[in-house]
Image 1 (tube, helix red, strand yellow):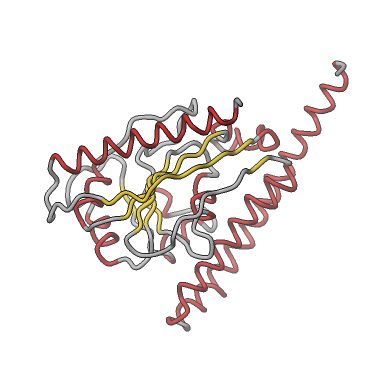
Image 2 (image 1 turned 30 degrees about the vertical axis):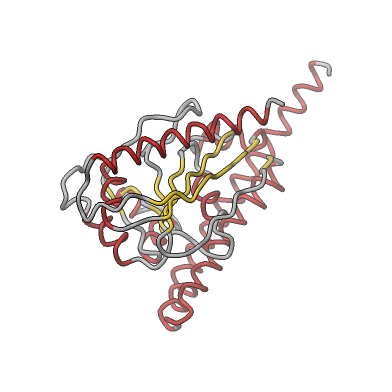
Length: 269
């Protein structure tokens, strides 16, 4: 390939990335309006079908980002996503590489949806996302919070929820694609609230799209791979966080590391 051809190819990829981003931004603005009016009204007026309405809506938005913006417009590559049962008592622990992690974990639930442990600061000022946090009753946390009162929302979400939960224990998106340190306070709270069927989900190939500006530049070069292992039954601790829970968390982190390594090994064959 000549230098001119290389430049043209890079220019085309960048252009597709920009078009994909513009499409996502415009779509989210329109979706924000629809979500605040039509979807919210249907969820309120049809309580017996609330879960179906919310599941259909979040899966539609997931398709806009992954299938249309990334797969069609940008030309990125999205491999198969593992299927996880969308029922109460299921907890997904996932690594955190990019802006696409949430759509990917949503896709893994097929026709259902999870509630996702989310940072408190995302609750205001972000089209679709901020309202979605309230509409879907996502448990919100402050990354700097460690007190029981600050994490009380996690206890309620675990004890009273009739949908799965998903959590990113790293808390922040990794800069290198490697598995980062886990913030364990929130995970301990969840594990002591009830017995869980835990799935460990790992994603790779998207860490170059860690931020919005990264996403603009790299959308066309995304080569996403995901895998999941489980379920693993969490220990019965009767409300106390002891050595069993800490050992279980260590095991889940080891499983995630192994799964991430397995994705990368299979890609090099």
